[in-house]
Image (cartoon, rainbow, N blue to C red; front, side, top):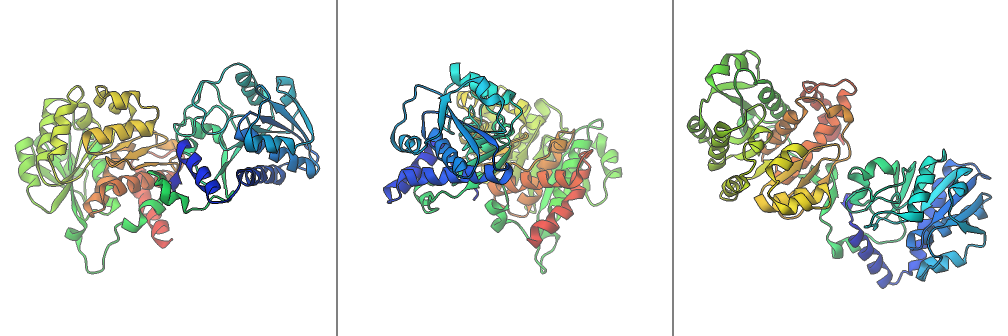
Amino acid sequence: MIELLTTTEMAEADRLTIAGGRPGIELMERAGVAVAQLVMLERPRGSRIVVVAGSGNNGGDGFVAARLLAERGYSVRVLRVGDGTLRGDAATAAQRWTGTTQPATAEGVADADAIVDALFGAGLDRPVEGEARAIIEAMNAASSPIYAVDLPSGINGTTGAAMGVAVTATATVTFFRNKPGHLLLPGRLHCGRIHVADIGIPASVLDRIGPQTFRNGPDLWFERFPRPRLDGHKYTRGHAVVLSGGIDSTGAARLAARGALRAGAGLVTIASPREALVVNASASLAVMVRAVDDAGALSDFLADARRNVAVLGPGGGMGARMREHVLAALAADPAVVLDADALTSFAGDLAALTGAIRGRKAPVLLTPHEGEFGRLFSELDEAARAPSKLARARAAAAATGAVVLLKGGDTVVAAPDGRGAIAENATAWLATAGSGDVLAGFCAGLLAQQMSVFEAACAGVWLHGEAGNEAGPGLISEDLPEALPAVYRRLLSS
C-alpha cells in the first residue's frame, strides 16, 4: 500500500465507494470496529475508556468504537466537543450509542485508563482554538495511552502540520491508505504506531483517483533497480565523476565517491584540482583521481560518453568558480547531481541555474537540505509559500525541471511531473557531518547504472536510511557506504 492519499483524495475514495453501493454507515461501522479492536487488544476488559468525539464523521467513528467497547465489558463514556449537532452517518452512529455522553472537560479525561481521540479527522485546515484546544491539551496532560482515529487531532492530514496544538498519540488507526500527514513532520511525531485498517474501500478506486504521492520503499522502485549481469563489466555499470574542492576540503567529495562506488557504479573518478591531487590520491584505492583544474578541463573530461553522471557541490566551495563548473557540467551530456555548495552558489540567481537545466536532455537531481533549499528558492513564491515540505519540493521541481530531493527526517523526492515520495525509514543518527554527501553518491551510483532519476533518488534515500539503521547508534558518515552491502543482500534476496 504505497499510495498516500491527501484528504481530498480520501474523501473521493469514500464518495466513489458509497456511489458504488456500499453505505457510508457501513464504512463508519468498520472504522469503529478497527479502533475498538486495537483498544481491546492492548487494554484489559473492564478498563475505563474515554472517547472524545467531535461533530464530524471522526466523531461518528468514535461513537461506534464506544458502543463496541461497552458491549465487550469496558467502562466507556463519551465526551462531546462542539454544539452537539451531528449529521448523516455520524448522527446514526451516535443514536446507536446508549451509554453516557458528557460535555468534554479536563476532569473527564484525567482518570481514564485509555483515551480514544475522535475529535477531528485528517482534514483539519484551521487552527485549533477554544474548547477543542483545551481538551487536546488535557488529553496530552493525562497519563493514559491515546488511540487516535484516522490522525491525531490537530494534525493536517495532507501537510503534516500541527494546527496550533495536536494530540500526541500512542497509536493511530487510519483507513484504506496512509495520508501524507502520517509521514511528514511534525505529524509523524504525533502518530505513535500507525495501523492501516481495511474498511471496505476497494483498491480499484485508486485508478479513478490517480494518486501522485507515495511512501518511499522498494515497492515504489524495485522493478527498475539495477542488477549486475553476469555478462556485464565495469563500463556497463557506468562511470561517476565527483568534483572535489581544494586541499582543505576534499573529504566530502571522497565520501560521495565512495557512496557512488558502493551503490554499484562500475567506475568512479574524483575530478580534483591539482593542488589537492596528492591528498585525494593517497586517500583513495578503488576510486580513481584525475587532475581537473577549471571548468574547461571539466568539460573536456565529461566529453567521454562513458562518464555518464557527475556530482558537484560536496565540499566544492561557493562562488564564481563553482558556478562555472556547474554550468560546464550542465552543458555536457552526463546526468548531473547538484548538492551543497553547487546549489548555494546560485542563490539569488535561480534563473541562471534553471535555464541551464531546462536546455539539456540528461536528467538533473538537486539534493538540498532545508537551509540550501531556502537560499536557492527564496525568490520562488510557490516554494516559499507552499503548505508542506512536499508541496515546496514539488514547486521547486516544476520550476526548474529537475527532480528535487529535500533532505531531513522526512526526506521527500519530487519530480517535475508531480510525483512525490516521502521517506519514513531514516534514523536520527544520520544527522552527522558528511551524511548528505554519501547520499548524493548513492543517487549518482544508481544513475550511473541507468536507473531513471526519480526512482534513483527515491532508492538512494531509502538505501541511505537503511544503511543508517544497519550502522546503528554512533554512526559516522564513513560507515554508511560500508553498511550498504548488508542492505543490498537483504533487498535483493527479498
